[in-house]
Image (cartoon, rainbow, N blue to C red; front, side, top):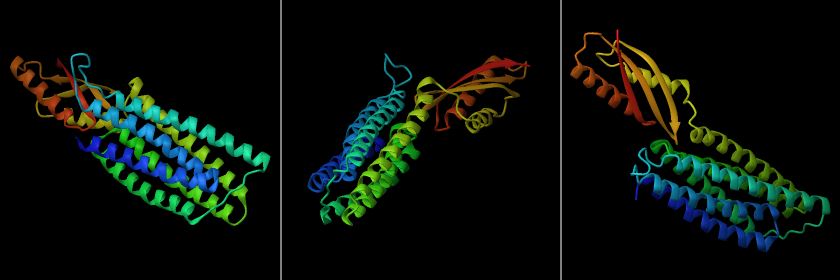
Length: 282
């Protein structure tokens, strides 16, 4: 099992444990903020399993039906994570507003309730750091989405903790207000994940720094000039098309050798999976 697969699977199992911990705390206390946090963990179970599965499929590499691999599966998983986040946010918001309007929300906060959220916050901090480190190392869009989600969970559970503190002190409406804040934040985070990964799906152009790095890597000895650099995302990796200008009297075998070296140089960039080199002479 590769590192990104292992990291995603551990994150999935961790969320299963957190969900069981928080759902018992929510049922025992009646706290909507804790229940919202538990449903968020349920959302994470579904989302992280999708992420793990797509990473596993991506690591299979190219096959006869997918000659450039399965890289588009990871951004697709990230978008599904964002969709689940949006659905969850709507349900939480609807319940919280209903409770505020009816003013009939009773809670019974115990030390177990506090413990469920405090432990979740600590665990999610560790998950965020682990997922972020592995996502940066492997350039995994799915792990990056999970790391953002874990960071969001730290903030949302902190808000939930404030909510149950208010409820513990006799202000049950604070619990509902905390749930509303959590829902809005979850929805916004889902939007940002979806926007980023939609560009991967539709083949958007990478940023200028990536284009400039590709051009720099392509300018090796023997290349007179870089005529054109075009690039687009295929999943969360870049395919680059580069036109190099060689001296007009460059022999054919040497031209081929230069093109191969340019290709290898550009593909040494971790974000670039394939480079296509075209030769002109001047």
